[in-house]
Image 1 (cartoon, rainbow, N blue to C red):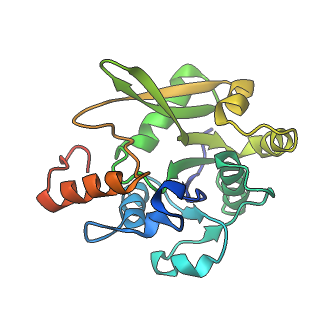
Image 2 (cartoon, helix red, strand yellow):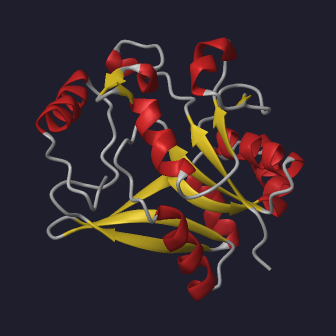
Length: 213
């Protein structure tokens, strides 16, 4: 039984290549990068929370619960997944879907495709990948479908020093949901000022296709 699925936006990165701070709060289109992420995810799953450390009031205008890492030491996205699982259990959810806060054009059918991949391949976890004609498959491990019943396993693995997502998912088995690379990678994320300028130009001239928006 699949049960309730909750959404978690991972916003725990330090944005060093953007000069620090919360890059998800930078302006894009008529709002911010985070606004675009929230809009896409809220159309696919409910409820939604934001995983971020530090003062939660900086995200107040977004209107989402802010869930900090419960595992100490800034251990990367797996710590965000764990925090999301713990929040989701309180919400009565059996699974979570995670997305990155700096990826404004991820697929609008992400959640459905992740769930489908998990069911077809028979694995409890599903991760997203984009498929490039020349480079082949590129995995995006922050975009995933996770059963909250694996919370204890994840906490134990973090305690043992595991930090890479694939290192932990391989323990349990992982399905892959593939998304074709169109005009640009659907999981294009904003890491640098040049990436932000690219996204702003696309927003300005309205070149993001309806299929990707």
